Image 1 (cartoon, rainbow, N blue to C red):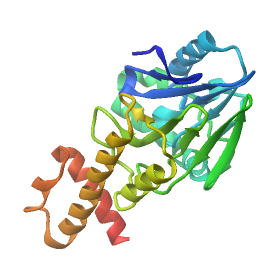
Image 2: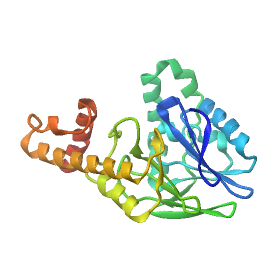
Image 3: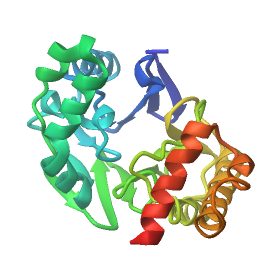
Image 4: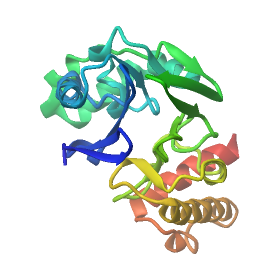
Length: 263
């Protein structure tokens, strides 16, 4: 971990022990793209040092979504452009300080580290699609729909055959449902698979995977959505044991599904 691995032509993944999180790096001619900035200024400084071992080129940043571990490092990459979905910027503006407080409560040993963070949302946003020219290489940013969050961004590097899926895909642990949209997530993942033919798919956390892995996770997410809808009608007692994930994850998925259905 904590080393760059080239998964396509001048496309790198750095997997970190902290949250088992992946950061992406796309290197073009005289410019580069950094995908996600980690969970603090200290972690971002470590990331910047690692990027500079690969390239001295200026960068553009993309936030895959509005969860703290993907954007708390943004300030250290300024004055670069920071791209994200429009709701990513809105949610960071609205909830950034709440994210900080929640992390200080959850990990009090890192209080000083989190208090150092300057909350910086993306300053370049889009709703459905955007194309970035990264030193002569085009990187497509797409929002395929609701899923792990309201604002998941997929970064597609077609000339390298690589897709950065963010937390729409999770390897090594069950998908995280904390503020997810379980009824939509399967369709969003299916849309990504249908539109993007690449075999190399980088999840937000865990090992790099292929289409077969994502398809299998899609099927699990679809099962979760169907079982949660059934539980909404029939009750949990006879249904909860059928879910593919541990009880704590299952209850979170059910709660989020009920919230969608009740809305």
